[in-house]
Image 1: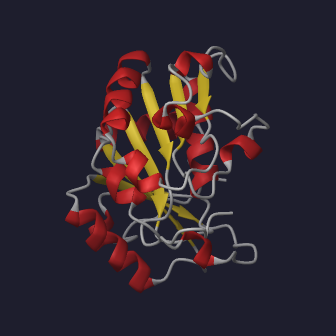
Image 2: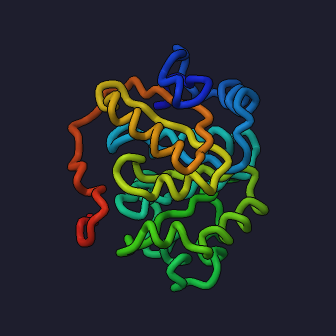
Amino acid sequence: MLFGLISGILLALLIYVFDKKVNEEEDVTELMQWNNIGSTIMVTSSVQGEGKSVIASNLALVFASQGKRVLLVDADLRRPTLHKKFNLPNNNGLSSFLIGTIPALSVILDKPYNKNLYILTSGVIPPNPAELLASQRMEDLMVKLKAQFDLIIIDSPPVTAVSDAQILASRVDGTLFVVRKGVAKKHNLLRSKELMENVQARVIGTVFNGKKSEKESDYTLYREKQHTYS
């Protein structure tokens, strides 16, 4: 579930927390008006297990229900989850296009998940996620997709885990941070803020996820080493 939207930037670090859930049309409309979030949003967190993928999914569903043409992208090329959440095949996806094994995304995006929502899964986990996300092919892809959709929501890896989120943050209009009670630590948030500032990312706000975390997964899965993908 989506809990609380904090207006402002990560620098503020949870100054204001709204009591209501951000899952109604008026809440999302306020998000759009208050922060002028643009047409491309990256959803991320400081560490693993804060619920960023659920937040990204719910936002995409709500915006699509408002009549917007929405694309939800799983750009977590290390531990993708969106294909599982939406029960979709993942043999082809973002990585397939970036590597060049499929010539056009129309092969994948030929049918919407529902009336207005399209989902681009991660594809097969590649050995070089950061390199692919930083490629010219990814930059060209973002330009093409922005011309086809009203809103693109990107689910990325956690900021402090690998460099992928920093790469993506420099290519989107705004970054939305997810902070989960009992999981996010102050030093991780401060480090995330520093890393986002290094790439001049525009942090449009923070979603406070008050749901208690399940047992934490192995953080080392996100470490930027070869042969650590699962």
